Image 1 (cartoon, one colour):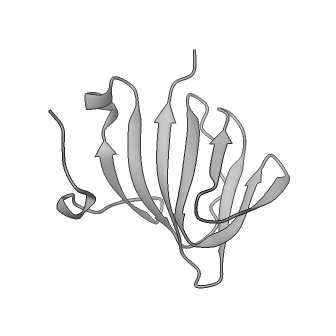
Image 2: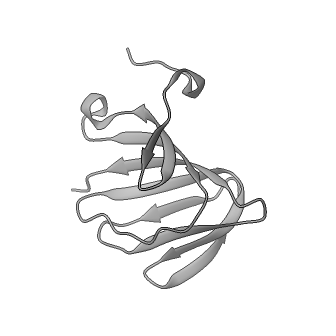
Length: 105
């Protein structure tokens, strides 16, 4: 069983973004679940996986391949593989999300 509260996990950093791996793909069979703290926009794409953001805290704008939408707590965002995307925080400058990454069929 893999059962840990996020407070018990170490904070790691990927391209300047602090995150905690809630479910590592090695355990989740290709499904990764992360707790991300996003402080600045970082446009990028994932060639081999889809991603879902569930916004926990903060406000901002999500851009996926040139289409921009406002996000807020409770928003769910699907980012298909290969799509350039970025999340730009507003307000206090921080957006906290659950990021679910998986390999589409």
